[in-house]
Length: 262
Image (tube, rainbow, N blue to C red; front, side):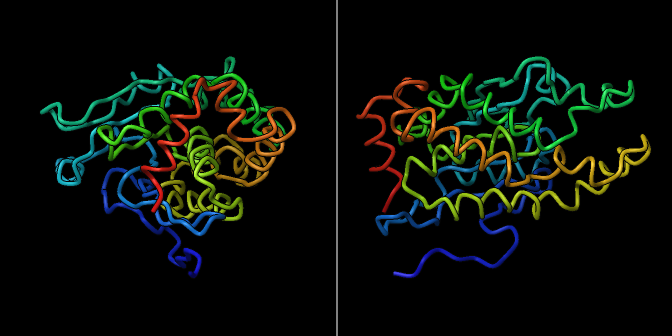
């Protein structure tokens, strides 16, 4: 069968006004020539701008769970706007490495603290997210393994770093090829492009050129590639990582593959 290929820059994107990077993780083919089922698991940028129409669409698609990976301060400043009827369960699963809090980025930049705007910083950040937050990744994958929780969406702020790691771990578990995992990662740049224009302008007002801001605002491949290499060198296989760091067992891994692949 032909591999899943979609030339649109933002395939599987839901037509939401308030979230530009909300997209389906289904459709990718695996090394065993199976396909990830669609309309079950989604990734997104933050949901604090959802309109009433956006909320109605999520209700229409019968979403069950939202997993918010933003830091506590990010969540407090811009809480997710979900339907008030309680039909969608919100889980706050903050991921913060050390003192790096995206909620404080502009304050740090205004104070002249800019040494973290580098690819090396984000390479190390991705490795730290992998090593230190196994229980959070495990909790999300455990939720996904239970059909009663689907459809489910996990998100951070831009839907590219913390969300990208979670998406990568899921797709790896399902047997999706790394080239398609990188393709999925790249698509955040296309989906976020229009919204990033105003953020680049704010950085420019502080004297920060686009090239310097790009490691933070874009979704470069280098940090993800370094994380995958770190996973292989430190844990061997994705299953071993999930069993030793994320607390998953073989039964849960089997359920993920059985329920999400066709």
